[in-house]
Length: 134
Image (tube, rainbow, N blue to C red; front, top):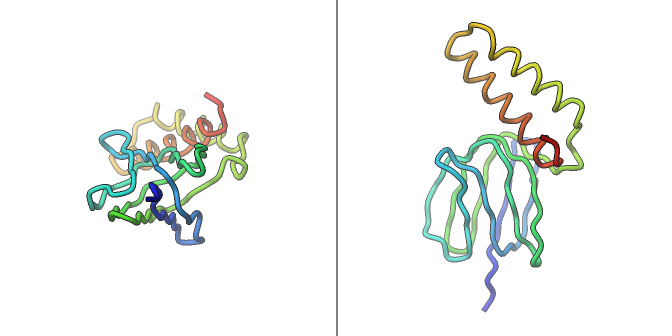
């Protein structure tokens, strides 16, 4: 009996990933969550961060922005704003975005600006982390 399940990762622009996998680990507001075949059905909010995908006994990583994940016993679908493989990430651009967000956090801002700046910082940091840069 197979221990794999079908996963799809969709963004508004493309079908980012699809196929049978052994496991995934995603970031949620309450921490990391692992999904295996036969997981209890649920819908979960996905936080900006790294997704780890175990396929053919190897782990691969990508960066996801916020979205939702629907888990069924034999299928999981993630709907996210953006998804990027490590080779799609421009390190210089990510480092510049991180610096800008950190500088903005030092200024006074309203709640909306603060939330947007924290989200920009989280995206930049996830991009750098998946590239192995702190």
